[in-house]
Image 1 (spheres, helix red, strand yellow):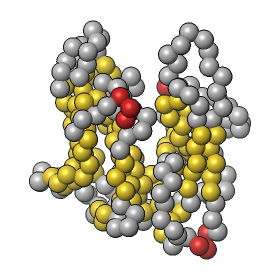
Image 2 (image 1 turned 90 degrees about the vertical axis):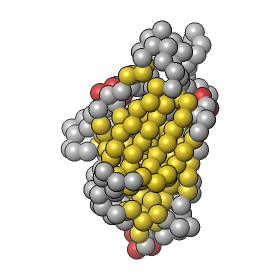
Image 3 (image 1 turned 180 degrees about the vertical axis):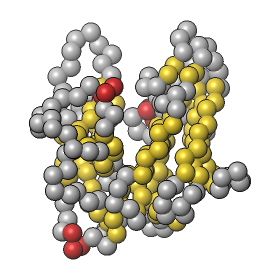
Length: 229
């Protein structure tokens, strides 16, 4: 029903992923995060799940903990990250839920660029209920916006952070819709717009900077993921 995550100082994130397909690698295998092409998000630690909602964990599904640290010091860090799953009987599940995530990986923010803007669209493949939604950029972010609408039609605001701060890299604002989930129909377009102020002499690209969304949706058993670029 939920996921608790614990991370040490200088932690950027710890998330729970799942293997997309069968993988012969044994438990305990350590992966380079830049080569994690066969994984998908499994659960987001939000601690705000309505009663009766559950995420399916089939027998034999391989889970992977991805953890990321930013070490600003000169010495190595010894860290211990923990993820705890809260379980419930399948008979008590009133509605299935899963992760929603979009990601733009092909952008480039030019050196010394102010208010550089990138937008990308993702289309929902199925009907869903939106339970929670948030945005993700790093410390050069200045503004974040997400809108909903139809292809080639008008858009309505879903989520806006008019002044992004470096703190939001690790703890962004999150919009919750648990008491009144948003009903999103198949073919609904989510438009994500990120703006950055690059005060460096180098171009910023993924994954040093990011432009992504994350959330929880109900009515599906599998993650709804869109990656562009």
